[in-house]
Amino acid sequence: MQIGVMTFPTNYSIHPTALGRALEARGFDSVWVVEHTHIPASRKTPYPVGGDLPSIYWEAYEPFTYLAQVAAVTQRLQIGTGICLVPEHHPITLAKRIASLDSLSNGRFLFGVGAGWNREELENHGVRYEDRWAVLREYVLAMKAMWTQKDAQYHGKFIDFDPVWVEPKPVRKPHPPVFIGAQSKWAIRRVVEYGEGWFPIAVPNFADQMQQLEDECKKAGRNRAEIDVTAISMVADKAALATLSKLGVNRVLLSLPTVNEADSLRWIDDNAKVVTWAQQMGT
Image (cartoon, rainbow, N blue to C red; front, side, top):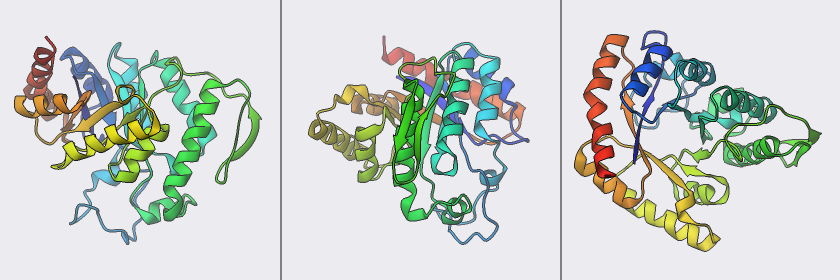
């Protein structure tokens, strides 16, 4: 099992170069950052977990710029979006941006994707809330075509183009793995259909959801072992890691608070023991 970190990076939290160096030095496997292009001031869509929306949702850095800085000062640390709101991008430009980052980082990019929960945010990008997952599916399939084919084309309802040349190609073959960031029964079916990974939160009924993943793989004739399960865990003790490992989780992500550099480094030092526990489990 690998241990990574997820965070909302802002201009008042730890700098990406300091974060990347600290995580790699302590043996963490990866760092994942969020995306919101903006938050509509109307605030018509309520915060899904209730209460006021934390300001980090609109203060967070653009993820690809942030991750490029992390990649520039590290050698092994993988870099991921946790998650990229794919429907808010054009798939041709997003495909090139991701391939460029994967190429420059020597194949270290992990593509966590989601459709978004804020109706107005999506509508500002010209996407109907009801269409968001259908849009995401087409965009992901179109990007996979661009990453793997010289004369790539895609003809769908939401994106349609004749053969195009999009270079560079990603270093990771056949392309950066796509992690579906949701955990409804429909999301699990999407993972099996067009994902290489699943990006859930380890909620109380997580064992049931892992069983659904097994069942859906059997129905589709897909090898469950091919799917990388990267789970966000609110509990990081030895027992929790052992349980998640037994369920088939490949990577556990810990949530780094959005705090200044000194406090971030203390948090990283405190949680480096989790990396050690995971390594001990594999010996």
